[in-house]
Image (cartoon, rainbow, N blue to C red):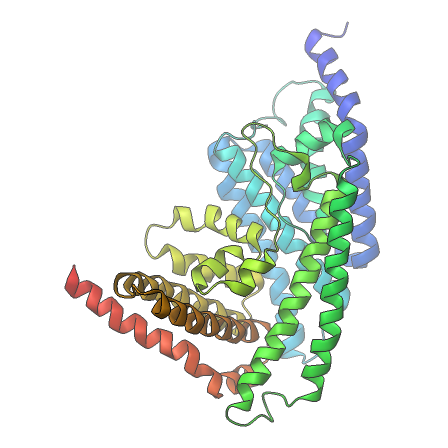
Length: 414
């Protein structure tokens, strides 16, 4: 005889199974097509993470999954370092895609483990050891596998919480409503416009001198145009990833269940291009990742949480020399930004002075961000050295000096 709990588990399984299996199978096929044999570097940690989630208690699961996932990702990044810096060979494109997907997998694994630890998601601890039926085992494990490898977010896209993922799969009848067509059309036009701007900017960058050939103030134009090309590329990719998630039914157009973590797209282009505050730019740049870092590191940091967050971001990105320098520089710039604007709000009252102040700080913010972006994107130490020795270093140095002076004044005032 089949017990009542077994019958209910069987009914839940039959209702949710097609959606979970479809997303999981699509993720596996996409991973194999895009990564080849490197896909095993994604499948293995996904399997191990599910085993850890299914085996450990709510208070232990986050610590162990975080340690395992970051250790695995770091080993894979060290393999990339060995290829680039020791063998002096260009890395395989499939390996780069794999590492990018692995970084996104780390986001989903740690987000899920935090949800379990905080009680937002029901824990499946003891699932392997207890005497539950096979249907209950499969019902509990399949959503985790599917969430970690579902194809709309395998290669890119904003971080989708497990609660949103589960709600959309179990309520699959509400996915992809008709009104989403206009939202996707608008995103498509935005992507087209960004791609056209990329062609123009790429022509400007190609026609101009590089950091190795520029002289004095010309290096500022080189830095600004190159960073502009990087930003347009990011904006286009973020909008494309967001469109894919929306088309699959996981986007912001589909509402939010009570207690569910809200959906945040990565690109807020207007704010990023108009803000005069580095701190606001930091919160809006790659928004879902910024929120993930804040939840994972910043909110748990006891001493220097800002520095811890940017240091972890450099670790998560792969610890290339430019990334370490760029993210630590970014942290100092954000700290300086807080002090500069706090003091400015106290002394600048008239609207003409506020207008001048906002204009100057907007330009300075965009140039500092361009400096940080070039530092993070360059791969070689020689390119990083060229950037540091150029006139562009004046802009972060100004904020460093202001940070020192204002921090000293703040200490005396307190």
